[in-house]
Length: 299
Image (cartoon, rainbow, N blue to C red; front, side):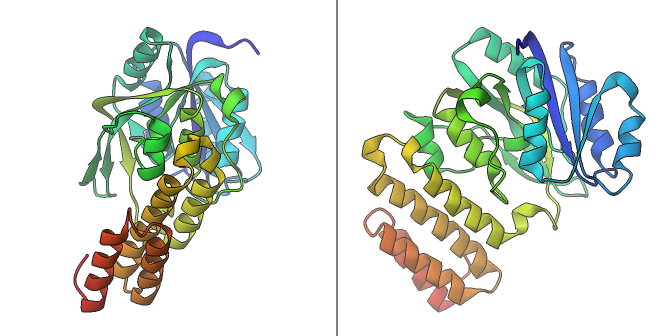
């Protein structure tokens, strides 16, 4: 397939998103970047999503499919994309003016950049800012950096723009993952291309109490799966102690969250697993966490 140079294919997966998808679509349509197509993948919605999408007429392309999850919907959008560039936007998030122009200009000026993202504001349903997801600061190999900083790609699934041809090399989103499929993808893209980040806040992510990111069990299992399946992407000298230190960090991160939710015994068990994996690199951290947990201190 010959992709149209300069065209950005915006991919919006939507499942039961009638309550929010209008804001996402409008934020994409209103971007001042002219060469764009908006692809909304209706992932087997059972609410009024289909009716809401139909109201846009030919201003958007709608792909209807049986429900298969976020990765499946994104993959269907990638397969249908006609643009040289692909930008992702979740149905409950939205963009600020200038996002597409800034990213497309960056990638046009530096052909070596394979994917990029933008600084992002995270809000609660009331519109209050929870935090600012800033661009990462790193030196050296970005793949290795991701293994120790899983959430480094600012904006993630609503902030990234990538060259369409990269997915032919790195593969599509992993549909076997129940969460963190975006981190898995960024690791694989980083293994075949360069990453860059624009420091201007150009995207907004909505964080709801019932969002997937609050499901610790699913997230932890997915995080461990991502770390293990992509180990070979690291340089050979980092596939051992360095990788184990990264895996230990996953256990300590989730241990802290479990402890805060009152699951102290599970938190301590995860901390002990981390200590066994990386006694030198993460030993001080693990012992400090265990001490605080035993004493009942706030983390």
